[in-house]
Image 1 (tube, helix red, strand yellow):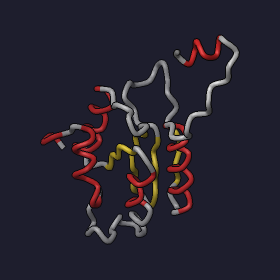
Image 2 (cartoon, helix red, strand yellow; image 1 turned 180 degrees about the vertical axis):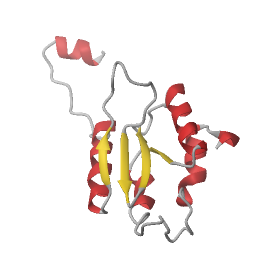
Image 3 (cartoon, helix red, strand yellow; image 1 turned 60 degrees about the horizontal axis):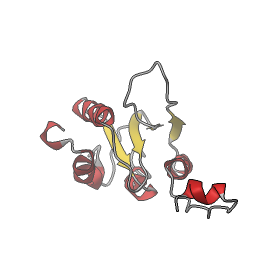
Image 4 (cartoon, helix red, strand yellow; image 1 turned 180 degrees about the horizontal axis):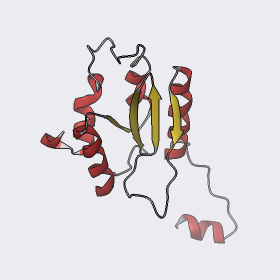
Length: 140
């Protein structure tokens, strides 16, 4: 029996675990804010460009573009293209399925030049992971 059929019969459906993109996005916004990042949501728009990221975080002149997906969420082709364009322009693009995927940003950008324990590597130890997850391949 589907959830809809279950509900039609007057039964309540069990509450789902809060692992939605919205919940993950709220965790990321809060955590990065604690570490001094200014984080804002990029509102979806009917008239804007397709594939834009969900969040933009800025700290000491460094911007990180963050696409949030649920653990089983799939990036659209437009989102993959956007991520590739950001990386090709030298920017930071993160595909985040949990707060763990942005943890390296907590201390990144603590000085005006973006230097950190990763040796001024704008993508930290997470770069190879994000390339694989976004299927960016050799273009990034």
